[in-house]
Length: 554
Image 1 (tube, rainbow, N blue to C red):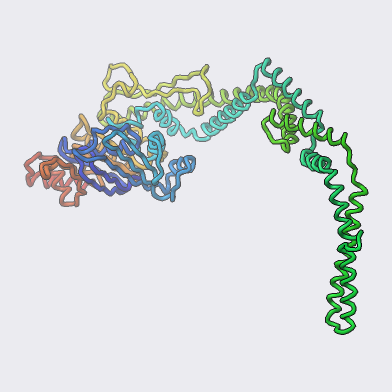
Image 2: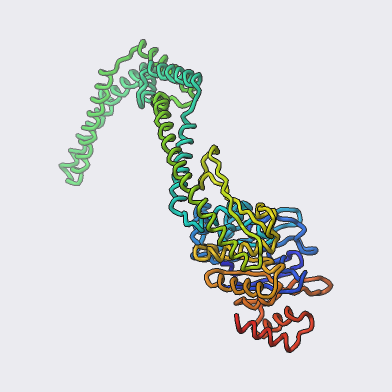
């Protein structure tokens, strides 16, 4: 439901802030007052193309904001979730700005979005019927949706869409696996060569680190032996060694212990130090005994490390990662060799899905053809009630050789003849704005129980009619508004009097500039406006009485 509309510096609108309610809202006013401008502003909110000519006077930009109540609009909330746009599930804010330099910006809940996203969301917010019907009856997609809505094909369409999505998924997998025979043979040969090359070095995990450590030890073997021998000498093998001096200190501390027991703990610490010094000496001796200096091994280690570094540069990785790279090559080879078999399995599965898709699609086509006859007759009868003497026929064109589509293989085309004897032609090529609006009204009345649209706008629904037909149109709009929000631009008092809410659009000169103003009328003001629509510029007592009577009968 459209809750609020704010317009600034748009065409001849200075600033406008309108609050909308549920039910039927009518907009009236003299020709040229600016009623169509309001619909143009809404069109921008719903994704119409921007034009700098709509910016008012010397203003720098046009700014339009609409607030929609979407708590029960599952379609909109699902789209917002898919687009990852934050929503509180109650209100939706859409803003559109157009600047003098031609830049246009669109926002949904303060999130910048492309215009296509506005159109996508707008389809689920408002349906416009009439000359501004940029997204309703003029679109083949909408015509198909109306037929399917009338036929209640939700279940079969869900199954068809699921099958289509499964087909698309399998096609993607097949394309990923597809490779020419020449490329396949070349790739397999290269992978096998690379795996063999890496396997020759018997690369294992952490091998490079182990080899590097052993190389460092062997290349510094002479230094290690000499240094260890020096340490052993310093620790224990001379009269002036650390061990000898520490033993002398221990003897002196023991003498002091005989004098003062406080030195006993110190004696124990020195004893521990001597034990640890002896253990360190033994460890170094053991290391030297086991150390093997092998010049030939050093050369072998150097050669292997050089090869590993060379391979790492070749495969653009680190030497430590060569083992992982080898594993990845083996996995890739196995996948490629199994890909041909997998591809055949997928193609067989695709054939089954294609058969299933066409079976469902053909069943849907048969049901659409039958439903189209019933739906067409019902619309035609309703159009006769609305003063249109022609007929509407729904044509189903099936495209059996085309690629599968999510909604089936049918093109649904609304054909209309607005006068008896005229040939049927596509609705957009024949019907005027007023006729489109009345056709839309007829369809919405028929589908009202299944309708999920948040708001509907009828523009020029009363064009070319009057009297009793206008009264019927007004009453049908009023009835439709019981479960829907209806906005109706009208010139006829019979239609205007049926509204639950009434806005009057006027045009005034303010400080030398023309401005469009919109006010919501109270009951007394409605009587005066209906009377004006009945009598023209001179409102009479009779027209006022008639206006009161019309409003009382709504």
